[in-house]
Image (cartoon, rainbow, N blue to C red; front, side, top):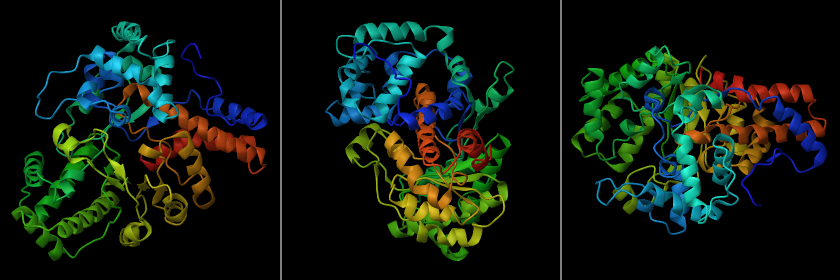
Length: 471
């Protein structure tokens, strides 16, 4: 291949007759609006609408899908523009970062990241040169020139991408000022909604927990030195988020257990945590109880509850201590859902209006646990392939695993889960192509007719994520 390009039938089935059906199905959603109910783009990016600084800070440095792969082949994080927490060391030159990225382009062969990057370079920026050591500088100059144009500012790209709604991920103490300013800006015509992410406030064994509770007290105006005050402060901040457009909460702990405690036991563990004497098992029990409280609150305030357990965070302590979280060293672990969720589902699983969207990075649980749970409980929806499973192969396996038990209409659409703004349309396009291919196989096997398959695909892209996340 002499130039960077995308085949029009990429990711569609190889068998010609099935590919033809898939092509027709995909065409019905190719230009459909993007519903993005879970991601990590900062609302201030769209509020300020400043030009992106350079190709490296857009494509490389903030994207841990990219930096982790380069780190895995021996590139140091600081050479990719990732700064140390203590601020030591000279900032990496963006052009040098870009050169390293281009020199290692073949590292991404066969990965989902390679597809997203290629899509963004070709479809968003019109690039035709294949990244390499030889083309790095000319590509950098070409992209830098594009980034200086009005058409490549964040708001213009948001409109060009066809994003209908974009959910961010936000700390409970955030004042959400950027969201309000966007909402009130007469020149802004998009929709950006916050998402309540309280993980750090529920993990009493994590350093800095009492300081976070002090910030929570300041933000809510409620004393958090008592257990009841702490719970009331969380309720208050959830109401604040709802008032500012939030439709969901987001929870990512190491296991899926949501288990209530007696009030006196929860209060006792909270006292121990405040005093700094809580045990590891006590902190785990308190977190599992507080997640039960989150489910109870969701039944009351209407926020959908998304959980994505099963990741060992900060697996490499030296990297975490040097560079912080979200720097590529979170690793999946085996996860159990059936027993872990039962106490919560016994209480809230049939409550009208409650939504629990269950994600996993342990795909063995799709057909064994998650789909059967969604196939009974009205509240449970199956989350899309996410993070390590956000790949074409896993997306196909997902449909094959969950459809028999849960069908299509107990799934929750697609989430892009990205900080890389320009990858949003690419990620949604991958999901649409894979789903079109899967539905085409059902049509070819005479399990669906093409009209119904098209209706299902349109629901997957639009209606299902809106309903699951209350959008």
